Image (cartoon, rainbow over all chains, first blue to last red; front, side):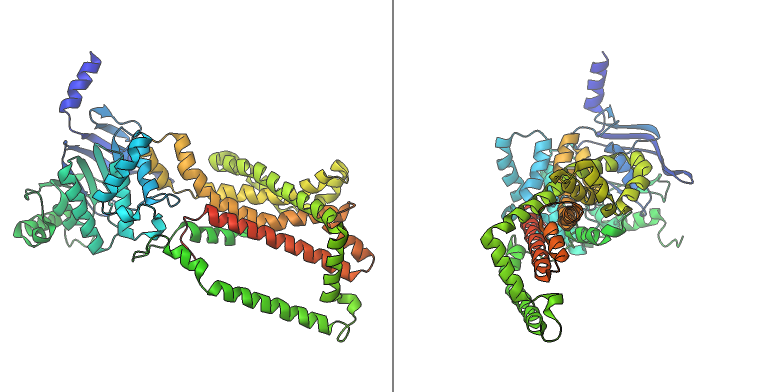
Length: 267
Length: 289
Protein backbone atom coordinates (compact mmCIF):
# COMPACT_ATOMS: atom_id res chain seq x y z
CA UNK A 1 0.00 0.00 0.00
CA UNK A 2 2.67 2.45 1.08
CA UNK A 3 4.85 1.26 -1.77
CA UNK A 4 2.13 1.98 -4.32
CA UNK A 5 1.67 5.47 -2.87
CA UNK A 6 5.35 6.08 -3.29
CA UNK A 7 5.20 4.87 -6.89
CA UNK A 8 2.40 7.22 -7.82
CA UNK A 9 4.17 10.08 -6.07
CA UNK A 10 7.38 9.28 -7.91
CA UNK A 11 5.68 9.30 -11.29
CA UNK A 12 4.11 12.72 -10.83
CA UNK A 13 6.45 14.44 -8.43
CA UNK A 14 9.09 16.87 -9.64
CA UNK A 15 12.64 15.53 -9.79
CA UNK A 16 13.80 17.79 -6.98
CA UNK A 17 11.53 19.18 -4.32
CA UNK A 18 12.48 21.41 -1.41
CA UNK A 19 9.78 22.27 1.07
CA UNK A 20 10.50 24.96 3.63
CA UNK A 21 14.15 23.96 3.99
CA UNK A 22 16.33 25.73 6.53
CA UNK A 23 20.01 24.98 7.10
CA UNK A 24 22.45 26.44 9.56
CA UNK A 25 26.09 25.81 10.36
CA UNK A 26 27.56 25.30 13.79
CA UNK A 27 30.21 27.94 14.44
CA UNK A 28 32.18 28.69 17.61
CA UNK A 29 29.80 31.62 18.20
CA UNK A 30 26.62 29.59 17.84
CA UNK A 31 24.50 28.55 14.91
CA UNK A 32 24.78 30.56 11.74
CA UNK A 33 21.65 30.40 9.59
CA UNK A 34 22.64 29.86 5.96
CA UNK A 35 19.42 28.86 4.22
CA UNK A 36 16.09 30.25 5.37
CA UNK A 37 12.87 28.41 4.52
CA UNK A 38 13.58 27.76 0.86
CA UNK A 39 10.98 25.95 -1.23
CA UNK A 40 11.59 25.05 -4.83
CA UNK A 41 10.89 22.38 -7.40
CA UNK A 42 12.77 21.25 -10.48
CA UNK A 43 10.74 19.31 -13.04
CA UNK A 44 11.88 16.52 -15.29
CA UNK A 45 14.08 17.86 -18.10
CA UNK A 46 14.04 21.33 -16.63
CA UNK A 47 17.09 23.57 -16.46
CA UNK A 48 16.91 25.72 -13.34
CA UNK A 49 19.60 28.21 -12.38
CA UNK A 50 20.16 29.67 -8.92
CA UNK A 51 21.78 33.09 -8.82
CA UNK A 52 22.68 35.15 -5.82
CA UNK A 53 25.54 36.98 -4.15
CA UNK A 54 28.66 34.91 -3.34
CA UNK A 55 28.53 33.13 -0.05
CA UNK A 56 24.76 33.40 0.18
CA UNK A 57 24.09 29.70 0.63
CA UNK A 58 23.47 28.52 -2.93
CA UNK A 59 26.12 25.84 -2.65
CA UNK A 60 24.71 24.71 0.66
CA UNK A 61 21.34 24.10 -0.98
CA UNK A 62 22.99 22.06 -3.70
CA UNK A 63 25.03 20.04 -1.24
CA UNK A 64 21.93 19.35 0.81
CA UNK A 65 20.12 17.99 -2.24
CA UNK A 66 23.13 15.76 -2.95
CA UNK A 67 22.90 14.44 0.59
CA UNK A 68 26.29 15.88 1.59
CA UNK A 69 24.79 18.28 4.17
CA UNK A 70 21.71 17.64 6.25
CA UNK A 71 18.83 20.09 6.31
CA UNK A 72 17.94 21.40 9.73
CA UNK A 73 14.23 21.56 9.04
CA UNK A 74 11.97 21.08 6.05
CA UNK A 75 11.93 18.27 3.55
CA UNK A 76 14.18 17.61 0.56
CA UNK A 77 13.22 14.90 -1.87
CA UNK A 78 14.62 13.62 -5.13
CA UNK A 79 12.29 11.57 -7.31
CA UNK A 80 9.80 11.45 -4.48
CA UNK A 81 12.26 9.95 -2.02
CA UNK A 82 13.31 11.93 1.01
CA UNK A 83 17.03 12.68 0.91
CA UNK A 84 18.98 11.18 3.79
CA UNK A 85 22.35 10.27 2.26
CA UNK A 86 23.37 10.84 -1.37
CA UNK A 87 20.35 9.86 -3.52
CA UNK A 88 20.54 7.63 -6.56
CA UNK A 89 21.29 8.98 -10.04
CA UNK A 90 22.69 12.31 -8.92
CA UNK A 91 25.53 13.91 -10.83
CA UNK A 92 27.51 16.62 -9.10
CA UNK A 93 30.03 19.11 -10.45
CA UNK A 94 32.11 21.43 -8.33
CA UNK A 95 33.71 24.69 -9.38
CA UNK A 96 37.05 22.87 -9.20
CA UNK A 97 37.31 20.01 -11.62
CA UNK A 98 38.12 17.47 -8.82
CA UNK A 99 39.61 15.04 -11.34
CA UNK A 100 41.80 12.32 -9.87
CA UNK A 101 45.27 13.49 -10.95
CA UNK A 102 46.68 9.95 -10.89
CA UNK A 103 44.21 8.68 -13.49
CA UNK A 104 44.20 9.45 -17.19
CA UNK A 105 41.25 11.10 -18.93
CA UNK A 106 39.94 7.63 -19.69
CA UNK A 107 40.48 6.49 -16.09
CA UNK A 108 38.62 9.48 -14.72
CA UNK A 109 35.64 8.92 -16.99
CA UNK A 110 35.66 5.23 -16.11
CA UNK A 111 35.11 6.18 -12.47
CA UNK A 112 31.65 7.43 -13.44
CA UNK A 113 30.95 4.27 -15.45
CA UNK A 114 32.19 1.93 -12.71
CA UNK A 115 30.05 3.63 -10.10
CA UNK A 116 27.06 3.46 -12.43
CA UNK A 117 27.63 -0.30 -12.58
CA UNK A 118 28.55 -0.47 -16.26
CA UNK A 119 30.28 -3.77 -17.02
CA UNK A 120 33.92 -3.66 -17.98
CA UNK A 121 33.22 -4.95 -21.49
CA UNK A 122 30.81 -2.11 -22.15
CA UNK A 123 33.01 0.58 -20.65
CA UNK A 124 35.49 0.95 -23.49
CA UNK A 125 32.78 1.77 -26.02
CA UNK A 126 31.06 4.17 -23.65
CA UNK A 127 34.30 5.99 -22.92
CA UNK A 128 34.93 6.37 -26.64
CA UNK A 129 31.41 7.77 -27.16
CA UNK A 130 31.76 10.27 -24.35
CA UNK A 131 35.18 11.41 -25.48
CA UNK A 132 33.81 11.98 -28.97
CA UNK A 133 30.83 13.87 -27.56
CA UNK A 134 33.15 16.14 -25.57
CA UNK A 135 35.70 16.44 -28.40
CA UNK A 136 38.45 14.91 -26.26
CA UNK A 137 39.19 11.77 -28.30
CA UNK A 138 42.88 12.47 -28.83
CA UNK A 139 43.49 13.02 -25.16
CA UNK A 140 42.26 9.76 -23.67
CA UNK A 141 45.69 8.86 -22.32
CA UNK A 142 46.59 12.31 -21.02
CA UNK A 143 46.77 13.05 -17.32
CA UNK A 144 44.80 16.00 -15.92
CA UNK A 145 48.00 17.96 -15.28
CA UNK A 146 48.66 17.91 -19.03
CA UNK A 147 45.32 19.50 -19.89
CA UNK A 148 44.16 23.10 -19.90
CA UNK A 149 41.55 24.28 -17.41
CA UNK A 150 38.77 24.10 -19.99
CA UNK A 151 39.65 20.56 -21.01
CA UNK A 152 39.78 19.42 -17.42
CA UNK A 153 36.26 20.75 -16.97
CA UNK A 154 35.15 18.84 -20.02
CA UNK A 155 36.58 15.65 -18.57
CA UNK A 156 34.81 16.43 -15.32
CA UNK A 157 31.55 16.88 -17.24
CA UNK A 158 32.29 13.61 -19.03
CA UNK A 159 32.70 11.78 -15.74
CA UNK A 160 29.36 13.11 -14.58
CA UNK A 161 27.62 12.13 -17.83
CA UNK A 162 29.24 8.68 -17.63
CA UNK A 163 27.43 8.15 -14.35
CA UNK A 164 24.14 8.60 -16.27
CA UNK A 165 22.56 10.91 -13.72
CA UNK A 166 18.87 11.75 -13.90
CA UNK A 167 19.59 14.96 -12.02
CA UNK A 168 22.66 17.10 -12.50
CA UNK A 169 23.68 19.44 -9.69
CA UNK A 170 26.27 21.93 -10.85
CA UNK A 171 27.92 24.25 -8.36
CA UNK A 172 29.44 27.13 -10.34
CA UNK A 173 31.00 24.50 -12.58
CA UNK A 174 32.56 27.01 -14.96
CA UNK A 175 33.21 29.75 -12.41
CA UNK A 176 36.98 29.32 -12.43
CA UNK A 177 37.31 29.53 -16.21
CA UNK A 178 38.16 32.54 -18.32
CA UNK A 179 35.36 34.28 -20.14
CA UNK A 180 35.83 32.60 -23.49
CA UNK A 181 36.24 29.07 -22.16
CA UNK A 182 33.24 29.62 -19.93
CA UNK A 183 31.12 30.55 -22.95
CA UNK A 184 32.35 27.46 -24.81
CA UNK A 185 31.55 25.20 -21.89
CA UNK A 186 28.09 26.74 -21.62
CA UNK A 187 27.49 26.01 -25.30
CA UNK A 188 28.72 22.42 -24.90
CA UNK A 189 26.49 21.90 -21.90
CA UNK A 190 23.44 23.19 -23.78
CA UNK A 191 24.27 21.09 -26.82
CA UNK A 192 24.46 17.95 -24.69
CA UNK A 193 21.43 18.84 -22.60
CA UNK A 194 19.31 19.62 -25.66
CA UNK A 195 19.92 16.17 -27.13
CA UNK A 196 19.41 14.28 -23.89
CA UNK A 197 17.29 16.30 -21.50
CA UNK A 198 17.89 15.77 -17.84
CA UNK A 199 17.03 17.90 -14.86
CA UNK A 200 19.71 20.42 -14.07
CA UNK A 201 20.05 22.64 -11.04
CA UNK A 202 22.88 25.03 -11.78
CA UNK A 203 24.41 27.56 -9.40
CA UNK A 204 26.19 30.66 -10.63
CA UNK A 205 26.68 34.30 -9.77
CA UNK A 206 27.02 35.21 -13.43
CA UNK A 207 23.65 36.60 -14.49
CA UNK A 208 24.28 36.43 -18.22
CA UNK A 209 25.29 32.79 -17.91
CA UNK A 210 22.10 32.17 -15.93
CA UNK A 211 19.81 33.72 -18.56
CA UNK A 212 21.65 32.05 -21.42
CA UNK A 213 21.23 28.58 -19.98
CA UNK A 214 18.07 28.50 -17.91
CA UNK A 215 14.42 27.66 -18.32
CA UNK A 216 13.90 29.32 -15.00
CA UNK A 217 16.13 31.52 -12.83
CA UNK A 218 15.70 31.67 -9.07
CA UNK A 219 17.24 34.67 -7.34
CA UNK A 220 18.60 34.19 -3.83
CA UNK A 221 18.99 36.90 -1.21
CA UNK A 222 22.24 37.45 0.70
CA UNK A 223 22.76 35.00 3.55
CA UNK A 224 20.63 33.52 4.99
CA UNK A 225 19.38 32.56 1.53
CA UNK A 226 15.74 33.05 0.66
CA UNK A 227 14.22 33.05 -2.81
CA UNK A 228 13.46 36.67 -3.60
CA UNK A 229 12.53 36.42 -7.26
CA UNK A 230 11.77 33.93 -9.97
CA UNK A 231 12.04 34.50 -13.70
CA UNK A 232 10.90 32.13 -16.42
CA UNK A 233 13.23 32.58 -19.39
CA UNK A 234 11.07 32.19 -22.49
CA UNK A 235 13.83 32.26 -25.04
CA UNK A 236 13.54 29.75 -27.88
CA UNK A 237 15.66 26.58 -27.93
CA UNK A 238 18.01 25.46 -29.31
CA UNK A 239 19.68 28.66 -28.28
CA UNK A 240 22.47 30.28 -30.19
CA UNK A 241 24.31 32.02 -27.40
CA UNK A 242 26.13 34.43 -29.67
CA UNK A 243 23.04 35.95 -31.26
CA UNK A 244 21.08 35.55 -28.06
CA UNK A 245 23.36 37.82 -26.06
CA UNK A 246 22.74 40.64 -28.53
CA UNK A 247 18.94 40.34 -28.40
CA UNK A 248 16.76 42.86 -26.51
CA UNK A 249 14.86 40.07 -24.70
CA UNK A 250 18.16 38.82 -23.28
CA UNK A 251 19.01 42.29 -22.05
CA UNK A 252 15.55 42.65 -20.51
CA UNK A 253 15.93 39.43 -18.55
CA UNK A 254 19.41 40.25 -17.28
CA UNK A 255 18.43 43.74 -16.16
CA UNK A 256 15.35 42.38 -14.41
CA UNK A 257 17.51 39.95 -12.48
CA UNK A 258 20.04 42.64 -11.69
CA UNK A 259 17.20 44.63 -10.25
CA UNK A 260 15.97 41.72 -8.19
CA UNK A 261 19.46 41.33 -6.76
CA UNK A 262 19.46 44.95 -5.67
CA UNK A 263 21.72 46.23 -8.41
CA UNK A 264 24.06 49.07 -7.45
CA UNK A 265 23.26 48.77 -3.77
CA UNK A 266 26.62 49.39 -2.11
CA UNK A 267 25.80 47.36 0.99
CA UNK B 1 54.10 19.59 15.04
CA UNK B 2 55.22 20.26 11.55
CA UNK B 3 58.50 22.10 11.57
CA UNK B 4 60.80 19.17 10.71
CA UNK B 5 58.66 18.38 7.69
CA UNK B 6 57.82 21.82 6.50
CA UNK B 7 60.13 21.54 3.54
CA UNK B 8 58.92 18.17 2.45
CA UNK B 9 55.31 19.26 2.76
CA UNK B 10 55.96 22.22 0.50
CA UNK B 11 57.53 19.90 -2.02
CA UNK B 12 54.53 17.65 -1.91
CA UNK B 13 52.18 20.56 -2.28
CA UNK B 14 54.05 21.47 -5.39
CA UNK B 15 53.76 17.92 -6.61
CA UNK B 16 50.07 17.43 -5.98
CA UNK B 17 48.76 20.87 -6.86
CA UNK B 18 49.58 21.48 -10.45
CA UNK B 19 49.44 25.09 -11.52
CA UNK B 20 46.75 25.51 -14.12
CA UNK B 21 48.43 25.79 -17.48
CA UNK B 22 46.36 27.93 -19.77
CA UNK B 23 47.75 26.53 -22.93
CA UNK B 24 47.48 22.89 -23.80
CA UNK B 25 50.51 20.67 -23.39
CA UNK B 26 50.30 17.67 -25.74
CA UNK B 27 50.16 14.43 -23.80
CA UNK B 28 53.49 13.03 -22.77
CA UNK B 29 55.54 15.87 -24.11
CA UNK B 30 56.27 17.51 -20.79
CA UNK B 31 57.88 14.39 -19.38
CA UNK B 32 59.90 13.43 -22.39
CA UNK B 33 61.34 16.90 -22.56
CA UNK B 34 62.62 16.57 -19.05
CA UNK B 35 64.56 13.36 -19.60
CA UNK B 36 65.80 14.13 -23.09
CA UNK B 37 67.02 17.64 -22.44
CA UNK B 38 70.73 18.41 -22.49
CA UNK B 39 70.62 20.13 -19.12
CA UNK B 40 70.62 16.73 -17.36
CA UNK B 41 73.95 15.86 -18.95
CA UNK B 42 75.52 19.22 -18.18
CA UNK B 43 74.49 18.87 -14.52
CA UNK B 44 76.27 15.54 -14.36
CA UNK B 45 79.38 17.06 -15.95
CA UNK B 46 79.39 19.82 -13.36
CA UNK B 47 79.04 17.29 -10.58
CA UNK B 48 81.90 15.24 -11.96
CA UNK B 49 84.07 18.34 -12.34
CA UNK B 50 83.32 19.44 -8.79
CA UNK B 51 84.20 16.09 -7.25
CA UNK B 52 87.37 15.66 -9.32
CA UNK B 53 88.46 19.19 -8.40
CA UNK B 54 87.90 18.64 -4.70
CA UNK B 55 89.70 15.31 -4.75
CA UNK B 56 92.68 16.84 -6.54
CA UNK B 57 92.91 19.66 -3.98
CA UNK B 58 92.70 17.09 -1.18
CA UNK B 59 95.25 14.79 -2.79
CA UNK B 60 97.91 17.43 -3.37
CA UNK B 61 97.43 19.53 -0.26
CA UNK B 62 97.73 16.50 2.04
CA UNK B 63 101.38 16.05 2.98
CA UNK B 64 102.23 19.61 1.85
CA UNK B 65 99.83 21.95 3.66
CA UNK B 66 99.22 19.60 6.54
CA UNK B 67 100.24 16.19 7.75
CA UNK B 68 98.42 13.52 5.86
CA UNK B 69 97.99 11.62 9.13
CA UNK B 70 95.02 13.94 9.89
CA UNK B 71 93.26 13.77 6.62
CA UNK B 72 94.53 10.76 4.69
CA UNK B 73 94.34 11.29 0.94
CA UNK B 74 92.04 10.12 -1.87
CA UNK B 75 94.61 7.76 -3.42
CA UNK B 76 95.07 5.95 -0.09
CA UNK B 77 91.31 5.73 0.39
CA UNK B 78 90.91 4.36 -3.11
CA UNK B 79 93.59 1.78 -2.45
CA UNK B 80 91.92 0.74 0.81
CA UNK B 81 88.57 0.48 -0.90
CA UNK B 82 90.02 -1.79 -3.58
CA UNK B 83 91.73 -3.91 -0.93
CA UNK B 84 88.46 -4.26 0.99
CA UNK B 85 86.68 -5.39 -2.15
CA UNK B 86 89.54 -7.67 -3.21
CA UNK B 87 89.64 -9.46 0.14
CA UNK B 88 85.84 -9.55 0.23
CA UNK B 89 85.90 -8.07 3.73
CA UNK B 90 83.69 -5.22 2.57
CA UNK B 91 80.71 -7.52 2.06
CA UNK B 92 80.69 -8.53 5.70
CA UNK B 93 80.30 -4.88 6.76
CA UNK B 94 78.09 -3.80 3.91
CA UNK B 95 75.76 -6.73 4.46
CA UNK B 96 75.44 -5.95 8.17
CA UNK B 97 74.79 -2.24 7.84
CA UNK B 98 72.53 -2.42 4.82
CA UNK B 99 70.36 -5.17 6.32
CA UNK B 100 70.08 -3.31 9.64
CA UNK B 101 69.10 -0.08 7.94
CA UNK B 102 66.82 -1.70 5.38
CA UNK B 103 64.96 -3.81 7.93
CA UNK B 104 64.63 -0.80 10.21
CA UNK B 105 63.30 1.30 7.35
CA UNK B 106 60.77 -1.31 6.21
CA UNK B 107 59.64 -2.01 9.77
CA UNK B 108 59.28 1.74 10.30
CA UNK B 109 57.09 2.01 7.19
CA UNK B 110 55.07 -1.07 8.10
CA UNK B 111 54.37 0.13 11.64
CA UNK B 112 54.32 3.88 11.05
CA UNK B 113 51.89 3.92 8.12
CA UNK B 114 48.94 2.25 9.90
CA UNK B 115 49.57 4.37 13.01
CA UNK B 116 49.55 7.45 10.80
CA UNK B 117 46.30 6.39 9.15
CA UNK B 118 44.72 5.72 12.54
CA UNK B 119 45.80 9.08 13.94
CA UNK B 120 44.36 10.86 10.90
CA UNK B 121 41.06 8.98 11.12
CA UNK B 122 40.53 9.32 14.88
CA UNK B 123 41.17 12.96 15.57
CA UNK B 124 40.35 12.69 19.24
CA UNK B 125 42.85 9.90 19.80
CA UNK B 126 45.39 11.91 17.83
CA UNK B 127 44.81 14.93 20.03
CA UNK B 128 45.24 12.86 23.19
CA UNK B 129 48.46 11.14 22.16
CA UNK B 130 50.01 14.05 20.24
CA UNK B 131 52.22 15.35 23.09
CA UNK B 132 53.51 11.83 23.76
CA UNK B 133 54.31 11.19 20.12
CA UNK B 134 56.08 14.51 19.88
CA UNK B 135 57.91 13.83 23.14
CA UNK B 136 59.20 10.51 21.84
CA UNK B 137 60.00 12.12 18.50
CA UNK B 138 61.98 14.86 20.21
CA UNK B 139 63.88 12.40 22.38
CA UNK B 140 67.40 11.92 21.04
CA UNK B 141 67.09 8.26 20.22
CA UNK B 142 70.84 7.89 20.17
CA UNK B 143 70.51 8.02 23.94
CA UNK B 144 68.36 4.91 23.77
CA UNK B 145 71.13 2.87 22.15
CA UNK B 146 72.53 1.53 25.46
CA UNK B 147 69.03 0.34 26.41
CA UNK B 148 68.60 -1.39 23.07
CA UNK B 149 71.92 -3.18 23.52
CA UNK B 150 70.80 -4.18 27.00
CA UNK B 151 67.45 -5.49 25.76
CA UNK B 152 68.43 -7.02 22.46
CA UNK B 153 72.15 -7.77 22.91
CA UNK B 154 74.83 -7.24 20.28
CA UNK B 155 72.48 -8.72 17.73
CA UNK B 156 71.04 -7.65 14.43
CA UNK B 157 67.79 -6.91 16.24
CA UNK B 158 69.33 -4.20 18.41
CA UNK B 159 70.47 -2.25 15.36
CA UNK B 160 67.22 -2.83 13.49
CA UNK B 161 65.31 -1.46 16.46
CA UNK B 162 67.64 1.51 16.66
CA UNK B 163 67.10 2.23 13.01
CA UNK B 164 63.36 1.64 13.37
CA UNK B 165 63.14 4.11 16.25
CA UNK B 166 64.68 6.78 14.03
CA UNK B 167 62.42 6.15 11.07
CA UNK B 168 59.00 5.29 12.43
CA UNK B 169 58.07 8.86 13.38
CA UNK B 170 58.75 10.10 9.89
CA UNK B 171 56.12 7.70 8.58
CA UNK B 172 53.63 8.43 11.37
CA UNK B 173 53.82 12.18 10.93
CA UNK B 174 53.93 12.21 7.12
CA UNK B 175 51.09 9.75 6.62
CA UNK B 176 48.90 11.60 9.15
CA UNK B 177 49.54 14.86 7.38
CA UNK B 178 49.05 13.22 3.97
CA UNK B 179 45.64 11.86 4.86
CA UNK B 180 44.58 15.18 6.33
CA UNK B 181 45.36 16.86 3.03
CA UNK B 182 43.22 14.47 0.96
CA UNK B 183 40.99 16.75 -1.07
CA UNK B 184 37.56 16.71 0.63
CA UNK B 185 35.86 17.74 -2.64
CA UNK B 186 37.19 14.60 -4.33
CA UNK B 187 35.78 12.48 -1.53
CA UNK B 188 32.43 14.34 -1.63
CA UNK B 189 32.22 13.87 -5.37
CA UNK B 190 32.71 10.13 -4.94
CA UNK B 191 30.05 10.14 -2.25
CA UNK B 192 27.51 11.82 -4.54
CA UNK B 193 28.04 8.88 -6.89
CA UNK B 194 27.40 6.57 -3.94
CA UNK B 195 30.91 5.11 -4.06
CA UNK B 196 31.55 2.48 -1.36
CA UNK B 197 34.12 3.38 1.30
CA UNK B 198 36.55 0.78 -0.06
CA UNK B 199 36.33 2.36 -3.52
CA UNK B 200 37.13 5.81 -2.12
CA UNK B 201 40.05 4.33 -0.18
CA UNK B 202 41.41 2.66 -3.30
CA UNK B 203 40.87 5.49 -5.77
CA UNK B 204 41.37 8.59 -3.63
CA UNK B 205 42.94 8.06 -0.22
CA UNK B 206 45.74 5.65 -1.05
CA UNK B 207 46.92 7.43 -4.21
CA UNK B 208 46.91 10.71 -2.27
CA UNK B 209 49.28 9.44 0.40
CA UNK B 210 51.74 7.76 -1.96
CA UNK B 211 53.75 10.96 -2.52
CA UNK B 212 53.98 11.33 1.26
CA UNK B 213 55.14 7.74 1.62
CA UNK B 214 57.84 8.25 -0.96
CA UNK B 215 58.98 11.43 0.76
CA UNK B 216 59.11 9.44 4.01
CA UNK B 217 61.30 6.82 2.40
CA UNK B 218 63.62 9.53 1.14
CA UNK B 219 64.02 11.08 4.58
CA UNK B 220 64.04 7.63 6.15
CA UNK B 221 67.07 6.35 4.19
CA UNK B 222 69.47 8.73 5.91
CA UNK B 223 67.87 8.27 9.31
CA UNK B 224 67.84 4.48 9.10
CA UNK B 225 71.57 4.50 8.27
CA UNK B 226 72.18 6.80 11.23
CA UNK B 227 70.29 4.33 13.42
CA UNK B 228 72.25 1.35 12.14
CA UNK B 229 75.61 3.07 12.53
CA UNK B 230 74.79 4.36 16.03
CA UNK B 231 73.81 0.82 16.99
CA UNK B 232 77.11 -0.45 15.67
CA UNK B 233 79.10 2.22 17.49
CA UNK B 234 77.67 1.06 20.81
CA UNK B 235 78.14 -2.64 20.37
CA UNK B 236 78.92 -4.73 17.31
CA UNK B 237 81.56 -6.87 15.71
CA UNK B 238 80.98 -5.92 12.12
CA UNK B 239 79.30 -3.30 9.95
CA UNK B 240 80.43 -0.01 8.43
CA UNK B 241 79.87 1.90 11.67
CA UNK B 242 81.92 -0.63 13.52
CA UNK B 243 84.63 -0.41 10.85
CA UNK B 244 84.80 3.38 11.18
CA UNK B 245 84.92 3.14 14.98
CA UNK B 246 87.67 0.54 14.94
CA UNK B 247 89.71 2.48 12.38
CA UNK B 248 89.35 5.60 14.53
CA UNK B 249 90.52 3.70 17.58
CA UNK B 250 93.64 2.65 15.68
CA UNK B 251 94.25 6.23 14.45
CA UNK B 252 93.72 4.88 10.94
CA UNK B 253 92.27 7.96 9.19
CA UNK B 254 92.27 6.22 5.83
CA UNK B 255 90.03 3.53 7.31
CA UNK B 256 87.67 6.13 8.78
CA UNK B 257 87.32 7.95 5.49
CA UNK B 258 86.88 4.72 3.55
CA UNK B 259 84.05 3.65 5.87
CA UNK B 260 82.40 7.05 5.56
CA UNK B 261 82.76 6.97 1.79
CA UNK B 262 81.04 3.59 1.56
CA UNK B 263 78.22 4.80 3.84
CA UNK B 264 77.76 7.82 1.63
CA UNK B 265 77.66 5.68 -1.50
CA UNK B 266 75.03 3.42 0.10
CA UNK B 267 72.85 6.44 0.89
CA UNK B 268 73.25 7.83 -2.62
CA UNK B 269 72.37 4.55 -4.29
CA UNK B 270 69.35 4.05 -2.02
CA UNK B 271 68.19 7.56 -2.77
CA UNK B 272 68.54 6.92 -6.49
CA UNK B 273 66.45 3.75 -6.16
CA UNK B 274 63.69 5.71 -4.40
CA UNK B 275 63.94 8.33 -7.12
CA UNK B 276 63.43 5.71 -9.83
CA UNK B 277 60.46 4.23 -7.98
CA UNK B 278 59.04 7.71 -7.56
CA UNK B 279 59.28 8.42 -11.25
CA UNK B 280 57.56 5.16 -12.05
CA UNK B 281 54.78 5.48 -9.49
CA UNK B 282 54.15 9.22 -9.71
CA UNK B 283 54.32 9.50 -13.49
CA UNK B 284 51.00 11.36 -13.46
CA UNK B 285 52.59 14.35 -11.82
CA UNK B 286 53.37 17.36 -13.98
CA UNK B 287 57.00 17.39 -15.02
CA UNK B 288 58.92 19.81 -12.86
CA UNK B 289 62.38 21.11 -13.49
